[in-house]
Length: 335
Image 1 (cartoon, rainbow, N blue to C red):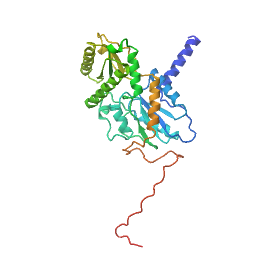
Image 2: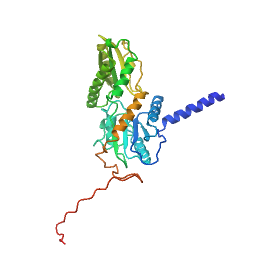
Image 3: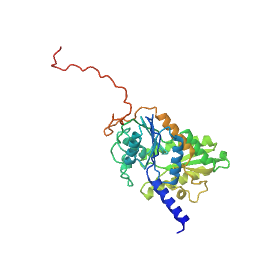
Image 4: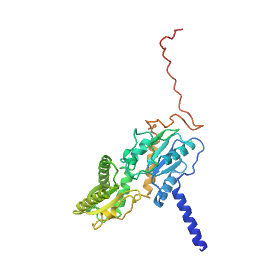
């Protein structure tokens, strides 16, 4: 093995090891910080690493940053919360790098953070359920605030419109079709689809397209369900294609969770496969969402296992409240 090949091999191993490890970046920790940011996302790919680097660059030394990879992974979430508390933040803003706020992963995150009363049974009972989603709330010594997912944020609308325009010739004669992975439960899938249809309309207006649509592709364990869902997606693409040239844009962070090519096999549509990440607008969205949410009060309503009230050593305690005078108990003698 030549020295150049050996060096390249070693660098590849170092990159793979770094991509697999939880992201924890050095930051200015002198004194208290108004807030720290805990990012949630799948992670594990080069696109994720590039995106996280963009977010870190924008954050700079203004606030500490941690990344919890996985889907509602309680162990990673707890690690990130503890790391931010050790960096002397007064509030932890949790920013989910997910497409939609309407799915079982977000429900489970809300439960773990103490915002939702019950865990997501749809996620916990799924055949592919993992050990990273325990039914135990997270512990935090500082307030926790959860932002929305990307949903229909103007920066996200602009990003999707630019993805469609990159494949466009004459937008006034074209239709944009958004497609994403369907949530596991039927109710969540309906809510997701309604939100995606509204998002598609905003993308249509932003890009000047003639028509728009959205579809939730099933990723369930049954092949029959997946095939039925793919057939429904193809039917919608054909319907839009009767009057317009169809441009398909995935509602997916990296595209690995969708079987778009299989569903569109044999159809005349435009689809370049480019997913959401990486993009500088996502870094802007994280920055804006975190800054706005940092002003909100603690969102936890269910603190059965959260050790509420404990704060990191050295942090300024909240103002003390004077308790009301005790009421006399029956049988007490008056002085």
